[in-house]
Length: 289
Image 1 (cartoon, rainbow, N blue to C red):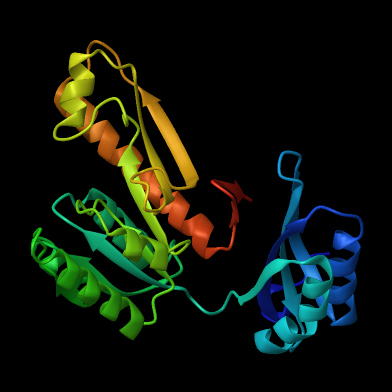
Image 2 (image 1 turned 30 degrees about the vertical axis):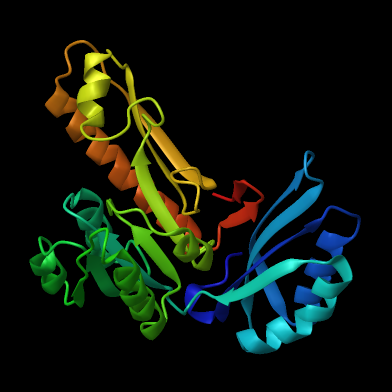
């Protein structure tokens, strides 16, 4: 019988990765039983290529706070050489969004946020243009105008990092932000920044990729959401999707379909990340849907 939500207690997520070996699941489940916790969802994966084991467990606790659980689990983590985290799901992640002049992804994320579908706090929207200051204001979110040029890029990135630190950001989302971040900033944000781009790379680079794709008679349009790394648009992939187009589709159709795919792929990637469903696996990811 399902326990009523009101009486289930605090909800947490444990994620871990380590060398694949015998006894991991037994140790984790035994720990949760010993601490009066109840597993409500569990997923695991052993990668035959890397010989690494990945696990995500959602559970409820009758009263133990997250810091106590982390401390108590540490000896198990040390025994298996785990990279692990325990998160309290009642604490909403703090997410900053960066945007330039294409607002479809930003607008979609804000709608999901405002409707409660995306369970995060958004304390800052940052842009190198002022186009979406009004949209940010309509959601009562502070808007930071940080203009960038080749000469001012280092100062602009310093301002960006200062905003992220001051607002205690857990995640940065590049919602069609059209400036390249420096290698140093990418490294500093490893695992904490998500980008979205169309699926035509590397075939159609630069301006008007949809027009280039139309000219070549492309039949599939897609988008990729990935973590930001110093290798431009080549970070670990979180989510992708495609839609079919044909000879009757115009360039405007390509653009409209592409924007729709970009919006929903980015939204899914952000939701997977904040729900602790994405675990790094070298240049790839494990995504527990």
